[in-house]
Length: 379
Length: 199
Ligand SMILES: Nc1ncnc2c1ncn2[C@@H]1O[C@H](COP(=O)(O)OP(=O)(O)OP(=O)(O)O)[C@@H](O)[C@H]1O
Ligand SMILES: [Mg+2]
Ligand SMILES: [Zn+2]
Image 1 (cartoon, rainbow over the protein chains, first blue to last red):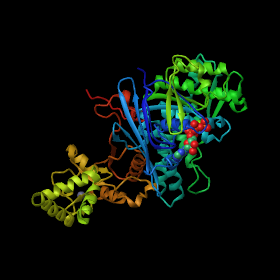
Image 2: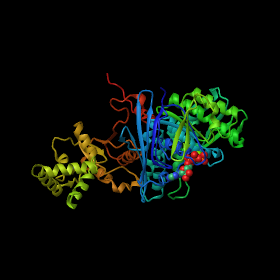
Image 3: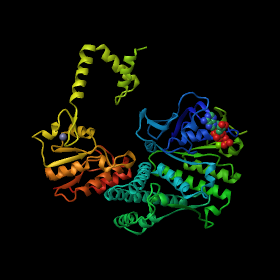
Image 4: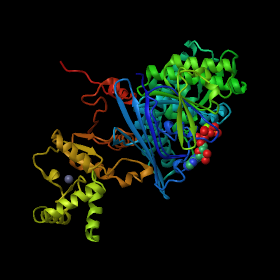
């Protein structure tokens, strides 16, 4: 028995009024026509990580249209190698506000960040094809999603940092004593450097892993650039903190509530590089970019297994569509080797032909999914 | 279906921490069934506390006298003041009977997003107390959240011109905690606050 998702239940979520599946930790392949509801199922799984899920949608948009209840609910049962972990998350929707809560073992948790204790989710979606062209914040979010899955406390650190930055901007533009701002800045510097250090550690781990893996996918390299990265790699802790504080205190930018600190992990630039070709990822072909992303996520899956404390699960939405038969076969083989539960989607059953011995197949139809017995022979 | 009065009672009870609509109904039913023994004494007790409840103008504690029982207790030491966020924290510390000094309730921690500016907290009162009572030690026992730590820094700064030792409670490995399961921030804090074992 390997760690993974043993069962998943949806209520009033997206196109599903009620839905249940029990993959028992095995790999899952969802196939079905456009609009059948495949991505919706992966989105449901992605909501067992802190954050807004793989579509970053509003909670109200996830509520089943025909349902009358003001909430949707997802339940999951995970095997972590020792026992079963039951998690549940609920989207509460009212005209005034929407709110997502989570429970573990039937007890409500204080924040969604608690989910990161139990799960380590990595995913690829078709939208991420644009990752290398989008603004830096999208690429930071990608890295932070990986950090959340890999390190305990990372999610808390992120929310605390965001919160502090907001405090900094507001206190700085308000009529308050300078000591308050100073006290906040000490915190911003400490947390900012801690977060930067964690991100750097993540990039080192990933780059090493990508370098060491015997993979048929092109090797990617992740580079983090920014002033706080510069400080950490150049100076010892105390000195870095002092210089960070100096930069913060010397801010001359406009005094309004929206100005952010001039230095810190919120300004980091994340660069991806195609190692063999020695060119930045944004200059690669569409297929090459997809392969780079897969290389990163596959290496990450291996890291999650080694370092993460949560149950590792990989979600690959439409990841095989752009791949030729050889690359597809390689992907399936590597998934098998890494041995982390992986959920894949695609419109054609045929594109998963080479995966027939390593996954359970489900035909997704509006509102339901029917298992197709393929292990005994494909087509 | 219950009457409007009973419904109202259930709704009120349901708002109590730890309860909810179902436990609210159960509690109401229990009161109704024990009208003389429980409901009446609860009523009397509620009214008594309601009439007498005061916020201590010295430390901010809630009690039926001002200054409160702790501030006027001759057995408590004047040499140290423990700064905490709320009455709940005071009760938590008192449960352990581990602190023999006096308290100072801040009323929260600095957070502009929650409207907790320095003037909304009892920071000035604390500074005045330190000036007047001349304690040897002020113990800052605030949450280990960024806002809590910000407030701690702020208070250290505000008290730096007084002849008083300002200390903070330790943050780190909880009793019974295994290192392997702690997050990096906790381990970092615990390591930073290490201390020598006296031989
Ligand atoms: N809140 C909702 N309530 C009901 N149906 C919804 C809701 N949100 C989305 N849908 C429906 O879900 C369907 C889309 O599902 P999904 O994106 O999972 O499809 P898919 O199988 O991944 O398709 P594709 O192959 O095109 O990616 C659409 O038909 C959409 O109308
Ligand atoms: Mg889809
Ligand atoms: Zn008092």
